[in-house]
Image 1 (tube, rainbow, N blue to C red):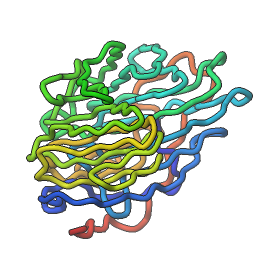
Image 2 (cartoon, rainbow, N blue to C red; image 1 turned 45 degrees about the vertical axis):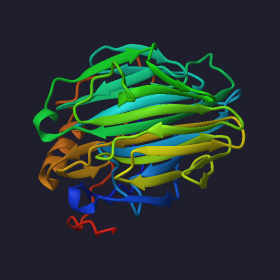
Image 3 (cartoon, one colour; image 1 turned 180 degrees about the vertical axis):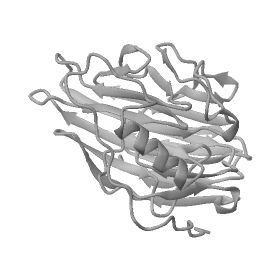
Length: 321
């Protein structure tokens, strides 16, 4: 999915100096962003108070939206570099096309994982004949310097490993959790998991104390370490935890995001992740000139133009804690 913000700003993210090294309960409020004609997303990362969680650098939550009489998601061809995109659905379908020639419909609880590496472009749209509701999350993972120029690729995994406990099913999307490992390719120590909780369930999820974590609420009523987390909000948990208490007031859906704190500082703008403003400027120029990112074939519409770069220089990211 694209960042369609036409006022996109250059921001510096990452670096271990900004990580909270102890357990905390920091509730993040989303920013509402229009995505195409009929979809509005709640943007949790980057956030005013929190830029990254491990290598997770971008999180949008959308829906559930009634799109029975709407076109649904319509994101024209757009570029990416230096990152992976993770598509995750609870309801609906998304048709993915990319400049490698991939054509794949991603359905609920299937992993659509695109590695941009040095450069890729793709589009995302609801199929012409689609389900009534659309509900999901789109996430980006920053690639470390050693792997950010890898060849681009796309993976689709319909069968993912699970971890179960009474009233809890955790589907491992990326990385590993409690011994279960996703087939999706990961380039840093990381975890992404979908947590389905039954009403009245209480569970304790094992965690890695070296990771920092957050939990995104997708649906229902749940308490995370005693804090009520409403759908569309995210609770940052810091590091140093060996387990996470969960309690569901109703059937609930959550996403656990975590990973080893990302040591490198990155520069993120629009749909690009680089290491300097100069790299971002060059990538934008290549996209606007039709170079470097390939062509998405079969999409009925024009490519997405890049927004104008800000005239002001990069500002260092303020220390949160």
